[in-house]
Image (cartoon, rainbow, N blue to C red):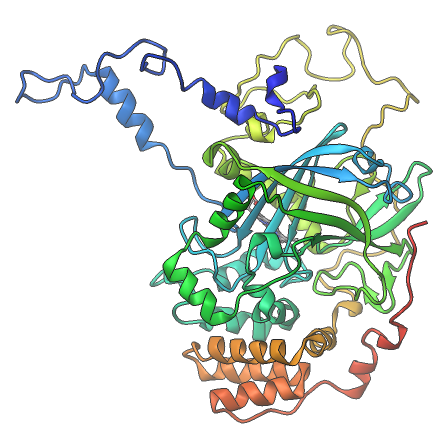
Length: 538
Ligand code: HEM
């Protein structure tokens, strides 16, 4: 790697460097041979048939024929930017990750996305937004692959294909849910009531952000940090935009979708180009790492729950500034490959069953999306640290590996670099005691409450915001053809909040059902009286 793969601001410019090879005085073919002209095929006379011999024509057309790669199965539409993360040192007490050391500057690449639309869909739809950050750290690349909503639809990754199939366009007409029938989405969330929490956030103003710059970001899952002393802390990650949190209103969103479907990506690129660099503070909520992995009655392994900031304030550990636009959309924004398993020493995962499935899914999908197992060699995906792995060959291999013995230990290629007992700052999974158990296909009882936190979120909104939520449910449910689905979803709303249910029912012209949540069940929900307790970082 030559030094110019990193710009003075720390921005990796590997892709830009590749683009430079597309310059020069002469047009050439792929092999570098100069081409005199590229507008006429080789023919048998000016009117004659085109000759199969024309290798320039065939190279040009064949390459064009293969320009498209599959779009992401979710989060297909995105926009990205380069930047830098500067740590303030407040995270050092809980994590030994080097990039959290005070004053450490780490280049980042961030991709924002919608979840459900195809690559060419509009920006200001009602949807969750992805907020994925690649930290090119000195200890290897760390990916924080988050969303702009702190909870997720499902509690177990085995349902991910199901929820995505339910929310993507209907299989018959391929018309997105937002414009046509909504039956499968509302069928799913009313039958799988764990999805009510995420759905409420989607129906709130958070579902139609004003700009990527005005979104919060959340790691959603609980992660386990480990410090130099080997002490562990459970955390949830938060990005807080210094631009504030702002949303569109529904009417604005619809008009913008029609007038400028690229509204969000244009906004991001324009502001960076103008030098108005957007910034986010990275914060953590910290929780003691107890065997129960619970905090104030909230199961920290349940990704449909958040921990109110009144119970665990967000403590800022650094600031990210986005200061450069991609040079080439395909090379960078499209080919970037995030993965929740890209971890560095000091950051580990938990047994959240959604996170566990994600650890499998991303690399698997990228092998098919990026044409084989060597996509980590693409400029945007290359770590800044030297790579010395034992991965060999495969489609699109660009490395010329030396040596003869890609296995360790070996006695041929310089012996074994692993020195027993030496502190190599290697990644080591935190040893965790596992309780004696049996194989089961079930969830813990602490995953059962699907409603009380959803109501708490709704009631935390201002009156105007609550009205937006009511209007959103009424509008979206109004698009359901099946009345029994609308009625079943109203039952969930009755279990969430009485006024919300009554007003949506009235808007739909349906009777208001009574709540089926018993007093006993609501008493089991997180104790709000505990609000105010905090867990300091040290
Ligand atoms: C993208 C799977 C849950 C955030 C993707 C992709 C897959 C996937 C297959 C496409 C990746 C690619 O083609 O490069 C899953 C599965 C999940 C899950 C199986 C649950 C079991 C989540 C959750 C979050 C999330 C909970 C947020 C915390 C993202 C983001 C992207 C993404 C931000 C886009 C990354 C980019 O910009 O390239 N996910 N996902 N996903 N996922 Fe998930």
